Image 1 (cartoon, rainbow, N blue to C red):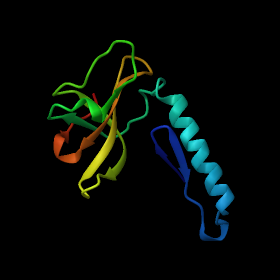
Image 2 (image 1 turned 60 degrees about the vertical axis):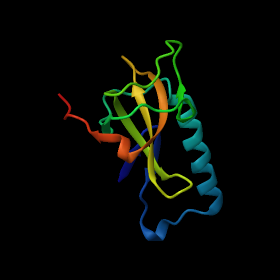
Image 3 (image 1 turned 90 degrees about the horizontal axis):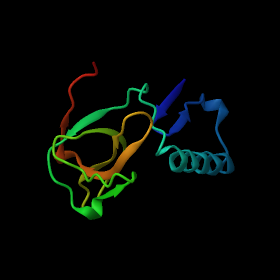
Image 4 (image 1 turned 90 degrees about the vertical axis):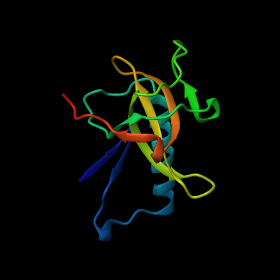
Length: 122
């Protein structure tokens, strides 16, 4: 069974097929390589979790990925990636704002409290 996380694929293996530390490092490197090379090629056919942005984000929590220079706006529908916690233990998520086609306009670190469920896919 494969679980897909945007830009990274993880294989769930039976207990008898444990990976060595070297294999784990290689998988992490491949994941990082895939993430770095796929930011501009987000596949719109993959149905990743989405959420609507409810708050303005400070510039230190987003990075523009497009020459359009489009900053995050309240109401943007974001594609959610990896969850994590900030230095105070508050839940956050790495999110991307998809462009038409396979690109993303920006990536952002967003607190879960700054998001709401997005409408269902059409």
